[in-house]
Amino acid sequence: MFRCKAPCKINLSLRVLGKRGDGFHAVDTLMAPLQLADELAFEHSLGGMRLVCDTPGVPVDESNLVMKAARMMEKELGRTLNWTVSLMKNVPHGAGLGGGSSDAAAVLMALNRLENAGMSDEHLVGLAGELGSDVGFFVLKSICRCTGRGEIVEKASASECGFSSPVLLLKPSFGVSTPDAYRRWASSSYLPGIPYGPVDWQGVEFVNDLERPVFEKFIFLAEVKRWLLAREGVRVAMMSGSGSTMFALVDSVERGCEIAGKALEELDPTLWTWCGMCGAGCVLDSE
Image (cartoon, rainbow, N blue to C red):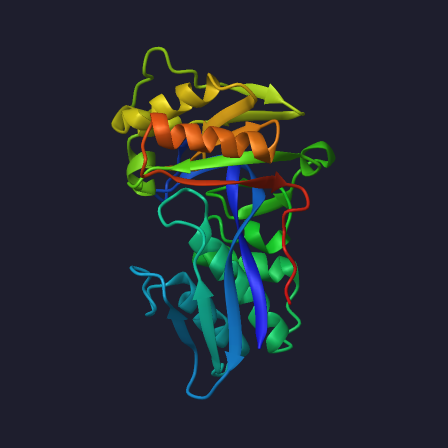
């Protein structure tokens, strides 16, 4: 049995540059991996590719990016692949953390290895871009800058690649529709009294242009950002991707856990929380 982990991400910066002719939006985003990861196990079997997952609400049919990645590899190799993929979800859905995209990238990389396909990272990034805008990021296992609609992936500058920080994640029970956030980006307005950035820290500019449309619709997320910035030990607080996860870069993991406890008491007892590290050194090796 082959096991691997699929780390999620946060957007350290996300600039929306405008709408393209194909309907997508052009972006410039800096993304960093986290220690938080889904887990995948591959077991050789008969009868083609199969996905199993015990997490309620996770589809195991052809709509899942895991299966789409597997079908893409079958097409590339010109043969049926026979593996059962067991997926253990640790990353919440609809969170702006790229959990599903990371799972897809993990499948591309695992099948490339298991089937001795010999595809380069560059080739896998190209395939990943066909699956989704941020799938390619997870192939390079580094802090990366992504442009185009997000599918053009390059390793970040030397100073940015070395970025590392303890981080706290807070996610409410609701998710945010990424297409809706982009659709309302141009016409949305800033909320008074909410700091939108940018903020410079450790050689990185932290800003998220999607906060404007998302905060306008989900005012609770704006209040979470303001609440986080008022906590001692918080260096940066921002929304990741299109949300609904808010993150805070903090002095230590222990301090992040303390703030998480306060958030459950003062903001919402149903919040999902996680504390750990983000940035350099957070990509986990396969077993």
